Amino acid sequence: MLVLEHSLRLKDHSVWDRVAIRELSDVLRRLDFHPPAMIHENFRSESSVTTKLKGLMQTVGEIESNKLDYDFAPGSGHLDRKVILEFAGDYVRLKSYTDFWRRYGAVPESVFQDTRGVGQPLDLEEGRRLLKEHYKRERKPRIVREKLQSTLEREGQLLCEVCGFNFNTAYGKLGEGFAECHHLQPLGELPDDEGVTTTLDDLAVVCSNCHRMLHRGPMMLSVEGLRLIVETQAAILDQEDEFGADGEE
Image (cartoon, rainbow, N blue to C red):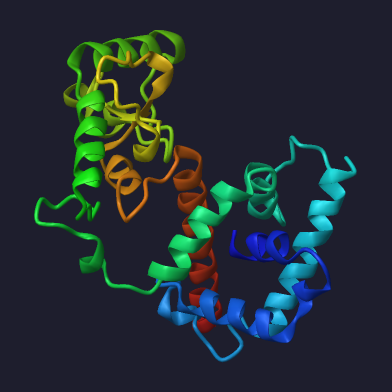
């Protein structure tokens, strides 16, 4: 996502500016979700970032010229293509995520936690009002029950829309019919009119962990954005396993 934002922001020949490439390399190396075993001298180096940028821009061009099927199969470049299809046409949303990572990517967890244990540091009164209104819409028992029942009737199960977790599968009878609901509208876009009706389409079915992650940090993530983070982290862990296996050999 950071490399895509770099290419969309600079667009012209300045994409290849050495200072800009160095800055991007530094940001990528600072991100705190890389396993320590992967951080070596050439990890996310200027050279590797340049190679990644070339490949990504080629993929963007192929997608735009319809040389790549939108229903691509998992494999090489799978996550890159998902990111491109999700964000290439929505630079404002893409930049909101990359700005967050540029600012907080290497900051300890304590920075994001408030006294209530919710990872949403809202110091301003306006922020408190919006968060209170957001939670109120998520906690209306009737609409939550209707959302879960509707999803259960349509899908036959309640899967987290971010990570696919199923409470029934994990906990058996105890978890049957259980999940949480997350209001999709960003906090800053909530209307002042408290009488505005929340519909089933305004809610997403999520597990408890993903629900907390959606609210973590100074901005609310989208379901799609968090799903990409989960998939990216899974890919990183796969790389760590491969790295460990190579090291054992």
